[in-house]
Image 1: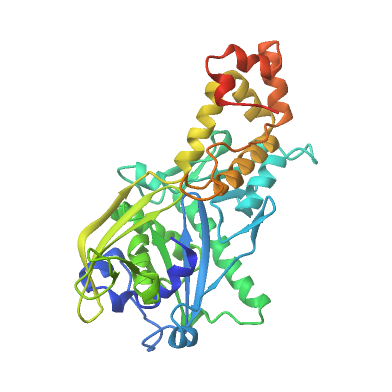
Image 2 (image 1 turned 60 degrees about the vertical axis):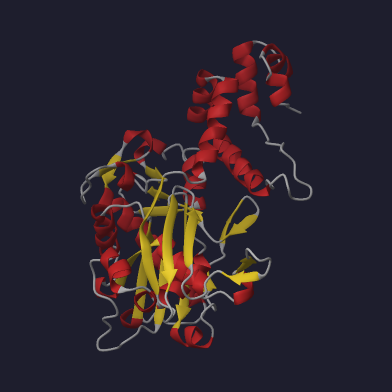
Length: 388
């Protein structure tokens, strides 16, 4: 779900959905601000499987324009800026936070390069760990999460440190803008996949509280339901489709039924709601989905390389050239975003990936011949892959 949609919907989360649909998601009270009916500020964290980000909205902006939302766009890597940063956490040997996101990946890949005393195996690096809460039938605060090099930490520590980094980043963002963080008047919302069970949602809540977020000011909300609320606030012309009679039809009109499909990095989440005559929403079916997100494309790419190049060569490359592996994945990520549907102008079913020199040399050494000759010897290889 786009970060700019989270905060707008969540300002109205208890107003737009009937009690039986949204309030059952959370085990905490809503809007308990020392007697205030509504918060002054809402901060929403989209803690994703592949990437995470945040957005915020002031009550005054919400009153004037519900779509006036402030997003962080300072996550940068590989020459491009994004609304999110990879959900990767790097902890020092003493388990204190070192980095998060792009910088965590980069620093971990460079450990030992400049300082021989920095041994990667002494650090704790967690990548894309959110889905472990889905794959386990039962989970509690002490459920172990595996880091690189086979190290483990309790899930409550990994998630709380990640949320703390995001929370501190938001507060620093406010401070740099000359704004004092109004803690007692701030509503925090953390979104979770619709496919999570109650145990996973409760772990997320306790992790957020351990990260320093006041429990009475915190809500856990389902990602696709927040997206549905946001879509209902969009201008009419953005929600018009061609009707059966050829005329434009407003999809969010009263008595309409809307299905929102949230295609994320790790999961695909689906919710179906009906628009009531008073503009509230009623859930038609229980929200659901599955682990079919964009990371599956990344996995297929790496599987393709393993198939073409060979398991032994790829394992050698990954273990001994972490910086080059990082660059390879970042190159694929940027190229993946440029791929267009075949119906679009300038679409191309092929795109170029830069093969690291270290990987090329390992492959040629293992096979005893040049890459172009290796491909010629593989059935269909030269047709499917070309190196230049």
